[in-house]
Length: 225
Image (tube, rainbow, N blue to C red; front, side):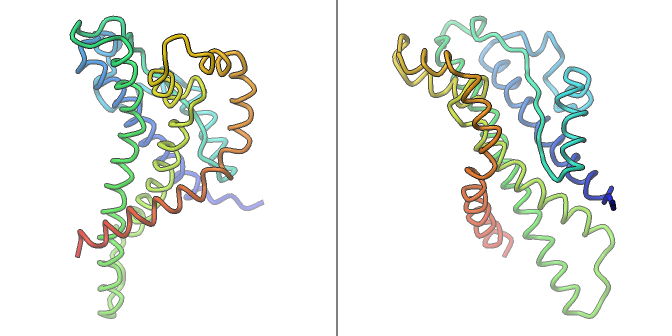
């Protein structure tokens, strides 16, 4: 059995960058709203080592195993306490803002990766047209940017699903009345919903990821000229 260690490393690196930025966004937003918890746990810097130390199984073991199988899977969490935010924000507002910060950060990172990908694509095309050898440093960054686009778009859409403990559930629950029966129903059967999305999320979200990637890349190619 041939194992492409370069692809494994590439996939894991893209995942680790993505989840680090995702968790940092939660921490930054919580701190911005006045919650001292992320600062207390030293989460106010995008440090992947901190994420791995806090979640060795979810941020190292499982993602590496998944990378060998061609999958990007794993998890981490950031300690926050919406009850400690500034009094000018309600708890529901804080929960909503802290939760949405993670997926938004992945969308931003995906778009930055699209800009890098588009720029390098044009540079490599010019290099090939000129009859020169493609610059050695371009290819790994080109491949990494490609992985970052897909992984970040998937993480953003996946985390927006309204199932606990995903970010989307907090946003969804905060848009409904406090005593909504739908929220209670989802909480009651959250294990069932979690199993369902872990089995089918890839197939469900793949078309949306590809469509969003196409839109982002079209904008990126336009911006880089």
